Length: 180
Image 1 (spheres, rainbow, N blue to C red):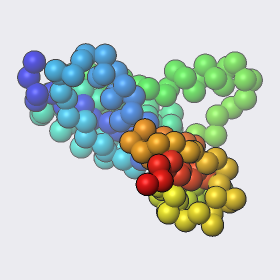
Image 2: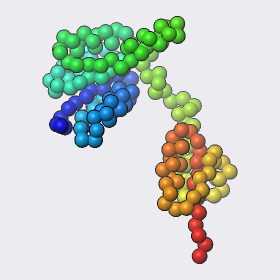
Image 3: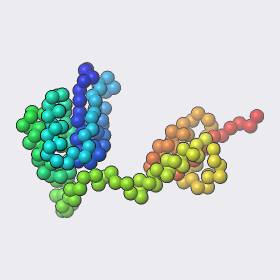
Image 4: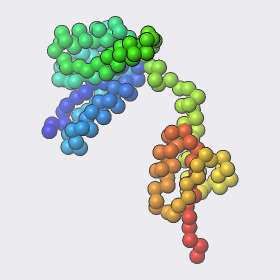
């Protein structure tokens, strides 16, 4: 297949959710297919929407969008229809159905899933801890670890430590070595 397919991930926040959803969907088409995903983040007014839609039309791109504000979603739908650009609204129906199910109105505030809160900083600290305490480097920190991995060399302790650290756990790993 051709490698010139474009997907525009458009958002009134970072665009990360749209990019991840597009990547996950693309994975269903195998390794041999490649499409370039371009993020258009912090798109928050009609003029910016119009520019993205016109550019998508010129380049025959597919638009996937995660616009929280109802007016922007409606405007995106009409702009893409007017310009015959294929677009997928990733959040609109989900927000509407959740509102109906929960019996609560949505906040309609872009970026709420990407704020830097206490949990974010805890994960950053855990990742740094794992890096500094890799391969038994700082044994004095073993008591500070949430998890200590012990195993022989070349058994993927470092990647596993990093994986666990990204979930917020302080991990140290120690290699078992045979005394000579």
